[in-house]
Length: 322
Figure 1: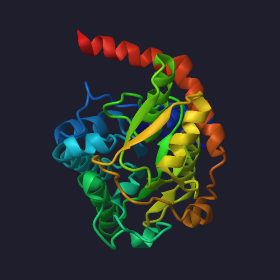
Figure 2: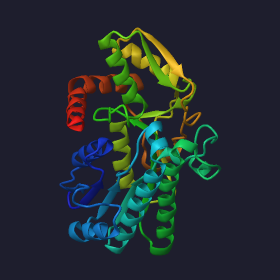
Figure 3: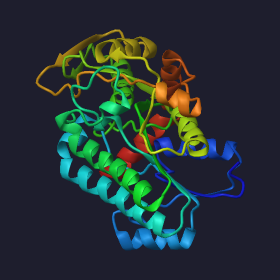
Figure 4: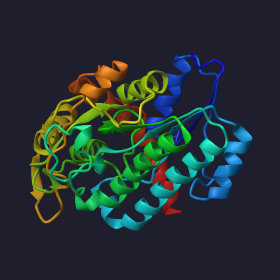
C-alpha cells in the first residue's frame, strides 16, 4: 500500500524509528527517507524547508524528539521544550506549504495531567498540568497537537496525533544517564549480578505505576494509523496494563537472575504517580491492540541487550572517554 508513496520518517534511525521503518517495508514501502541531524537540523526552519523541497514527501511520520528519563528531563527542561516545539512546528508548517498529503505526529503521554483520572482518556488531556519533571517536554509536544488541529481547521491539512505509552524492546537506549526505566533496570541488575553486588539502589519509593508497550506493537499501531486514520482527535497507543515500579523491578531482577536486595532512594523523584491508558479509541478507529505479552517482551529485550546492546554501550562509552 506504500509502494508509490514517498515516506519520510524523522527519527527513523532511533529506537522506535528503526521498528517503524521495518513495519513500513513490510507493508511495501520502497521509498523511505530518514533525515539525519548532521544534514538537516529540524530546529532550523530554513533547513526544514530545504528538506521538504528536496525530498517532496507525501507522508511524514514525525518521531524525532529530544527526550530522556526523569533525570534527563530534570536536567534539560529548556532544551527539551525548545527543541521539541521547534521541530514539530517547523516540520508541519513546511510540510503543508510543500504539499505533503499527510503527517503522523507521535506525541507523548507525558502531556497528560499529573493527576489525570485513571485510565487516561484522550478527552482529559487538558484537565490539569503535567507532572513537573517532564512538563516542558509534554507541553511542547501537546502544542503540536494544537497546531495539527488548527491546520486541519484552517488549511485542511491532514495531520494526525498519536500518544504512545512508555515503550520498551530491542534497540532501546541503555545509557544509564539518559535511559528510561526498563533498559535502566535491565542494565543495573545485570551489572550487579555480574559484579556480585548484594544491593541495587533505585530512585523513588517504587510506588508509581506505569504502562508499557512493546516497540514492535507501537510500530504496528503507527503504521496502521497512517493508513487508516484521518481524524483530528488524539489517540492513545498502549497495552491497557499497569504495573508498579516496585513490581517491575522484582520482575526484571527475576528474569536476569539477580538475587540481591533492592533499596529505594526516596530523596529522588518518583515522577508521575500513575500511568494507564484507555486504549478504546485506537481499537475503534484503526483496530489496534497490543500483541506481545509483557513478560515475553521483557525477555526479548534482555536477550537483545545481552547479545547486541551491551557491545553498543561499551563502544559508546569508550568513544565518550576519548
